[in-house]
Length: 395
Ligand SMILES: *Cc1c(COP(=O)(O)O)cnc(C)c1O
Image (tube, rainbow, N blue to C red; front, side):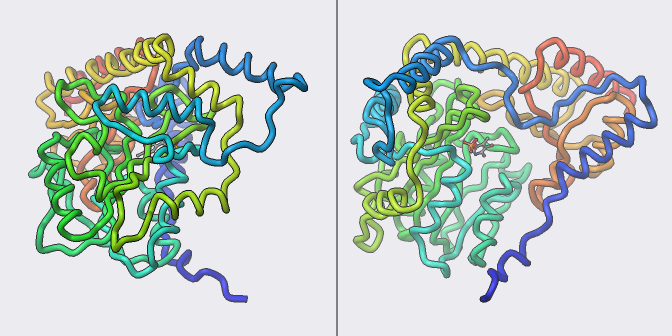
């Protein structure tokens, strides 16, 4: 028996543990403190009524012999894949049903998809980054190259033609920075990947937050992406499915690096290691894509967007450089006064009673930056924005 030694290379993930420890210590010392949490990366608005209705109805079907469902297509019921194809058609992207793979979420697919690729591929990952991409590759000792996202490039790094890459992770709109690529910028990545024979793993988890006219909500809006990109998406942030679970991955049939049929390989992988999402959840997901479901989800997104606007306005008023908050629920700010991420965390908690996330927790380039999220309650977020302004003025 030999254990996977790659696990020893994983950095211990102390970020949220450290935050919780500091907040607990602060609460113990100041029991009267009214703390506002703008650090959460989880949604707070409940499931919308059309989704709840669909779940109730589907649950009842499961309880009747005539409509009971057992094992089904591992790749997703046709009714849900048709709904997803219809959603993409609205973005001007034409998908065949067998290019769509329903799953239990984007996080698992961003790691599972690596089953399709040899161990010794070079993986290109932007820094700062959603930590799961790094850890999933570390677990199999894949060589990782980082590409710098920083203030100079607006936290939207572009490919360096001299840098070799086989697998490229892109998340846009981005977590943690909230920055999102334009179509022209994404086209540079697509051209680079096609010329390099590389595959882009495109995480579109925040696509529903995009409101800027002409901004891409799928990488397939860029010509040529179908020959180099796999898109991984989720209803977690779109429809508040973080606890309900539903994602989907698009593997185009035109994606044939070295002549390999990645679509057929992913089907083989999923039918072997995965047995499908619950019927009840697939009906709930179908309801998300209905006109009533979409409208209701967009109301929740507008609620978060309003929060983002309130935070962003406070920062602008205080003259603090930041990105995100427009097409994203995340606001990424430069810590003023040359403070590092943790020093800013301590002062923001101690002097304003606000909890956020130190940027350095997402990578080296996050040092000196800080993430605030718009997923909180509107009144509390407004209160936080007022405190933030006072705090920044006094800093
Ligand atoms: C929240 C989030 C997801 C969604 O993951 P699920 O597993 O579908 O809940 C995916 N990618 C990023 C970058 C996220 O922040």
